[in-house]
Length: 62
Image (cartoon, rainbow, N blue to C red; front, side, top):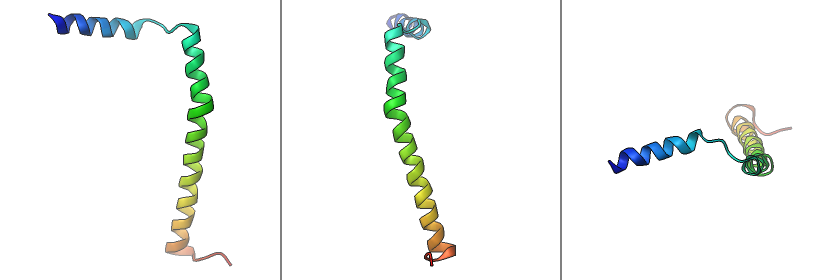
């Protein structure tokens, strides 16, 4: 009986919309923390791929 009530409360909390302040915090967090981290990881992955291809196929730059 407790699990049924708990799952109903969780399902209800997912259906309720966030207040506007919480939405803005989430957007700003993604814009100023998530996006720079993802960009940095993409640049690092590209650099690693170029470095690895130089080791395997192209050799050092001339």
